[in-house]
Each structure stands twice: as structure tokens, then as C-alpha cells.
Image (cartoon, rainbow, N blue to C red; front, side, top):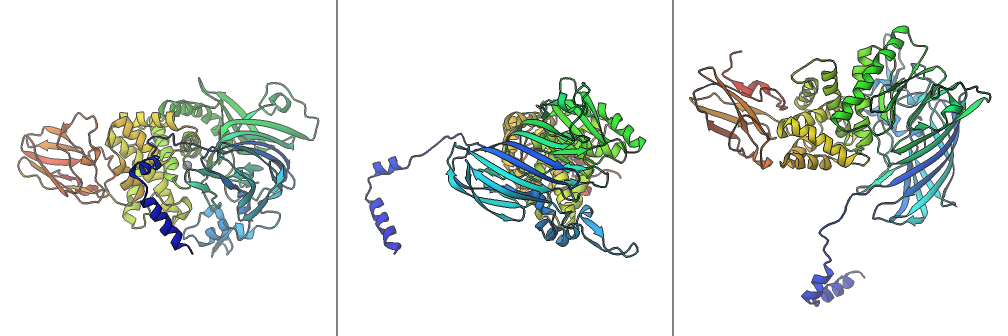
Length: 622
Ligand SMILES: [Zn+2]
């Protein structure tokens, strides 16, 4: 019987003296709370380029830096997603607006019917990773596979601070390219090897993140990667990590002429302090290099079989890529590795450690301004500032979009007053659609792909631009730099970023994070018709904001005003006339100007994401 035990405990506690009670309360006022796991990988892979099958060995030295005892670990076997009836396949077949890249026409040309490509993969076309053996410190482990995730029950729990060895022997098959990874995609790249190896799931202060591979986004453990890949001698490998044996390999990595006598070569890569290892290989890659001044060596890999115009694009973009590396380093923080590779992967664009895989064909604008600029931005958000992409997708997509648009505006001298206007328009269309889901939605659980895109990329971008409106652009620049200094090589969360912005600006900003990032509340302010010297504003939307305001007087002079939001407990630096703050719960705010008012405009620069801008001005002749 359980109840009497509780009763006895209760009675005994009641008889303790107050002195003993105080001693037992062991209160801790200060702890160093941040920690992250470490997984150092050593892998050796032997790839058969005819069958697209490979065998591998893997050692992971896994250090439990958490305060918790771990009695299990999880591995991702992402390639298993590319099998009929996988969760990825099920989602492709059930989501309202599936990504066309996952689909194929199973009807006729006149009457197309789109079906899942994954559902139609044959046994020699699917992807898989099969575990042959797995040990912990030399002792065999039992494990259970479900979909793309393996749960491993440990023989010996891992104590806080302990390092253990996991050794795995495995074999795999590279799938026909569906998304991101695969073989012989439509641009003819032989091997795009992303999410290709057994990868430990991350454990952090929120617990395990053993996410099934449904469609998008990742979260990995920081560590060092020592990887040997044995492959047919004609193939050039591009990817994460520094090549350790360039003079044996050649292929553009060494100035020496290398004669390949063996049928296969073993490439040895080392990547320090990364959370992923990706590579691509093709026998037709051109390999160019360009040294960024005071920066990394850029490597470019693209197929020599492309049309001349496309080959020209790949030459033409190289100095721009170097400029962009300098631009992002100045804006956010110095790119810390000595190498960055831009690789024709042949499918979309995706960011990885020290490299990106991108579509190689198309126009210069599409390739550089639309794709490479975005993927390079991801070297900061989320490769170095490694937020959990599955939970906080807007932090990497939105922030990358922010610096991408800023860079493209500055580099190509478009000089737009609001370089992020496209993001604002896209967000507003989402907010007005009635279909918006908050940015706290798990990346795979948006109702439509387009809702995900508009929320993660565009609302996430607006989040930053608008933060600049709230705290001042100079403070936003400082916040990005401080965020990098404090959080690079870690796993920051939204609260970590907003705390940095608070410390830089001296303003309270939790209201902003909550309203804009965690709800679908919208901003809508309106100006009432001015009466004499009196200006009256109305808050219609639930989300409050500080207000920049320009008043034109009847004598045609103008005056800028600034109304801080009371929740901010302070104000940004502004040359405008400072008015008393506005507490959000009051729907109406009035003040007296110095002269008779002709017209009023809220936020003339348009940096506030007001979903009904038509009521933001009055008395202005249109
Ligand atoms: Zn992106």
C-alpha cells in the first residue's frame, strides 16, 4: 500500500525543526548551465561506384557533458527515408501541397497525376544503411530500428563527464536522388552524399532529439570528423574537411602531378569542430580554387559537361563568392575554418559543414544571387550558430535570408530603402491568409510547404529587420556580432538570441519574442484624423510595437516623433522627438504637437510589419 508511506513521510517532515528545514533546502543561486555533448567520429568508407553500395566502419568517442546519466543513445540512419512506405513517403503522399521534387507524373501528359517518387523506388534504387555490428567499449549492444532512427540500449550507462567508444560496422546503398542526397540526379552528379552516415542524435538540456527524417532540417552533435573515403580513382571528392593527403590524391588539391596506379584511391579528410560531414563525388568535376583575402580558401566543384554559358557562370561567380565571404565575416563574425567549398550537388541548395551543395545549372542570378548567397549565409546561421533547425527553423532560414538580402543589396548596388521588402510582402500575405501557423511549429508539421517557407524564411527574416526598427539598426548589427561571439560552435535557442539583443540595447524584448515568434498575433496600427494639434493613434492588432511617426504641419514643415512601448522599459536612440511611452493594453494614444497638424504617417520607412498599412497615414493626399 502506498498511501501510508506518504503519511509517515508527511508526519516526520512536520516534526523537523525550522533550522533543519533550512539546511535541507540547499538552494543554488548560480550555476554554469550551458553544456553540449561531443561526438568525435573516425570513419572509413569503401564506395563501389557501379552498384552505389558502400561499406563502412565508424568509431565515435562520445563524451557525455550533460549532468544526466544516459542509459540509451539514438542514431539517425537518414538514407532509410528513401524507401517505399517510409514516414517521408507517407508525408509526401498526405501533405496538401507536396514538394514537386518528391513527385513524378504517373498519369499521362494530357492528364497528369502526381505520385510519390519514393513509393516507386525498386530494391536497387532505395537508400539504406544496415548495421552489421555495434559495440560500446568493445561489448556488443542490442538496438532497435524504427524508420530512420535506431534506439540503442546501453550495457553500461554513460555517467556525466564520461567518454565511451561506440564502434559500428555498416553497409549502405545510395538512393536514386529524391532530395538532397543520392546518385545520378538530373544534373548528372554521380554522388551527393548528405545525411549519409550513421549519425548520433543530439541530447541537450531539452533531452533527446531522435527525429525521424520526414522532409527537412537537422540537429547534430558537435565534434571532430576523421574520414577516409576509398573510391574509383577517376572521381573527384568535394566536401566537409581538409584533405590530409593532397599530394597522393591530386584532383586539384595539390600542385604536384599525381599518377594514379591503383584502381581506387583513399581520400583522408579531417574536419575540426563541426556537426556534420557531407561530400559529393563525380568523375567530371572541374575543381577551381580562390583564396579569400584574410579568409578561407574557396573551392568550386562543377561538372565540365555543362553548357559553356553555365561553365562561364561558375567562373564569373568566384570573385563574388570571395566578396561575399568577406561581407558576411564583417557583418556577423569571421568565418573560422580555412576552407569553404561550393559544390554542384545537382539538387536545390543545402548548407553543410564547410560547404554547400547547390544546383549548378541555370542563370547567374539564380545560381549566385538566389542560391549560393543564401547557402553561404547558412555557414553562420545555422552551421556555426547551430540552432535546432527542426524546432527553430526560422532562426537559421530567417537570419540567413536577412543577411543574404542585405548582402545582395549592398553588393549589387540596388540601394533599395527596404532590401527585405519581399520578405515583408510574403509574411503579410501569410498573416492575412488565415492559414498562418506560429514559428514555434515543428519544421515538418506545417500544413503546407508554403506556410513553412513563408514562416521560416520570410517571417524569420522580418523578425530581424523589425528588431532593428525596435532597438535601432546599429544595435541590431552589434547584437549579431555579439550573438556570434557568444554562441558560435554551440546550440543557441531563440531566448539566447533575444537575451543578447536585450543586453546590447538595454531594452526588455521578451514581449517581442513571444508575440512575433510564438504566436500568430499581428500588428495593425491606425491613425485617426488629426484635430488641430492633436494626433490620435489606435492599436487594432493584438501585437504592440513602439511607433516611429512623422507629422506634417499645416505650414508644410515636418517633425518626427518616437513613442516607445512601455514593455520595452526604455527607448532606442533616435533623433525624433521622444513622447511618453504607450502601454500596450490602452488601445488609443493621443498627444499634442506644437503646431496645427496636416497629416500623420506611422512608420514611414515601412520596417514595422503592419498587416494593414492603408490606415497608417491620414491627411495625406493620394
Ligand atoms: Zn536556407
